[in-house]
Image 1: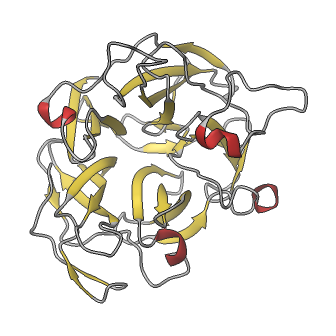
Image 2: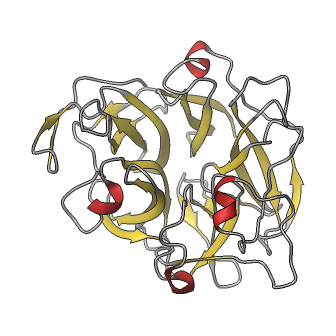
Length: 339
């Protein structure tokens, strides 16, 4: 799926119509509902003084391949209490799970043009969303409110009927998150989250870099690795999958050849997997030595940001697995395999 000049939306902040997905579409979440796959995806327009704004659109499919788009976005910056966090950058990179009572919860990035913050919203039907703000607003006296936080992957069951259901472990919901290192957080209600911090005597497993320097007490659950494809950063992918064997986390990564994989171009985003203990989400059991997906196709190697495959949506649908991903921050692609 690529950009479109068909959808037009009256932007409440700009006060005029915009072609809200004419520049790029990428980084989708997916939900199976009522015999269809619904895709919630990031879309960018070309207007605003910032140069572009992201909004989250909705499309549906009966076969997992061909999608019908809704004409307007379903989650976007507006004149509400989240505007100062979402404008002019926008609402980005959704991931969606379902609760046992069939409410949908979306983690997404609120971007004000300078700082990315991990936010959450809920919906009964994927069309109408209630925003709750920063997932860490009440944690540790608010010390994470103005930190760079992104990419919330909530541990869930992937049911045979396709639902992705957030599941408690030892009385708590768990979420892998972050885009420097991968960290962890817990919640009682899927709205208010508390980051997992190191014990007083604990040391980080790798030297801290980039955004990790501003949050030195966080417990790193999945670190970057020197000399490999995931040398520069690691970032959560689709909702983590709870299985009898453990918690399977697909993650995205970025490479810097000078201290990473010298065979991958500068800044290459590729994808890999990690397995955590099903009873202790902090305990890493296994991790792939290399990526299982990296940019190869022309639409993956060239675009708004070159050399990117970015995985965010995984669906169990009609006896197949469908894996949806952003390509070069410009388009949306899918890979599939039988169950």
